[in-house]
Length: 520
Image (cartoon, rainbow, N blue to C red; front, side, top):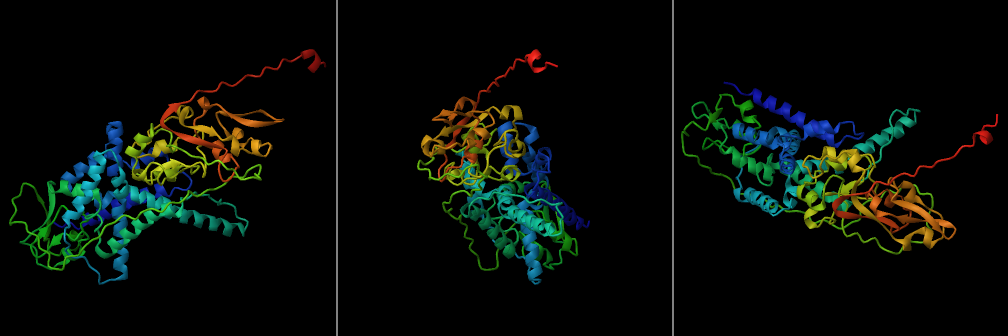
């Protein structure tokens, strides 16, 4: 039976998942509802697994569906659902267009390498750290690439279009602002993209079968899949076309053997086979010969490494200030804890569940969520933090809690969020222009949504005073503070998120004298 149509189905499904996930991370105007976001990310293996461990709900059990598909048909997740897998196929397609004589060939399985990466990820995970998974998870790397590298390019294109249309008095498109991390933090997604491109250009799905822990884990499970691809020796004419199009390099034509643990179910072999020499077998069939594996070319070495990050400060976008300080501030802001997003319960819960996919970074309307460097420690690199030098957390916004695919940020309602204390404000009198320059300011109090910061009389002017029991740590005061280089007011993160008090509004009663005010 001809099965060439399987490739067309696989391509269609791959395009669907790749396009929807791309739009999710490149959504410039937050058009996609968080509800649909959960549907789109439901089948991503690592986020779904972590969310299930956090919530123990079948509503977060997309990874179980992936496991069932793997037990039935092998690594269809790698071929159709994983966005990095499709990105590799795009790069391989480009390579084929550049060099039309290029074809794939049988590769050494490099079991020691792929199982080492899997063991590394499992060891870190069992020890309570997601460090290795953060670095290697394909979905999370896809998110970082699109959020940190591709999205700024699209915003730049949008803004150039705005300038062009303005020349013709057309204002239908408006400019957009984006906050990007410093070059040091951009090095990792750039490095990963370069490695993916090089590996795909050279040998198709080499990353999937050497580095990716998800691919290796699903490859182990696919060894016992119900339906496996095999070579039918009676129908095979030895044309070698299947081996030449196998992007996983797992078809051994000489020994009539398919290493199904490395097969990503791309079905390219079905599409090119002229004799129905490629078919499906079941686990109930007896093998016609002993499975052997030989490599008839010189063994290549694959060297895998991770670039060390260079320390850099986060990029700062300053808001317009009412005053410009004359003196530079002198007392440094020494923060003991970073500020985790509202709904993350605690820093430990957040770092134990976050894979640094940066979907929350992409979706955040104020862009206060930014990738961290060493704020959460070495093992928490790239996990998002609230960066109040860049922006502040909108009092009404809960988008990050709605889009998080892993449960690192749990869903939180706006009413609860307004009382969730993610940090506490600290006032540094020695940096405040009211105390150092004896001038009016009040930017912090004006922007505080809970009035935890308010102004009190001080030497014929007014100075800030804080009441931490009302502070929720949104960072509006820190962002608005005009002092440089150190803020006069900043937010210290809470290791575990608390509940702030709600400040009662004072009712002002004005007695009206009807006879005097309405004498007519």
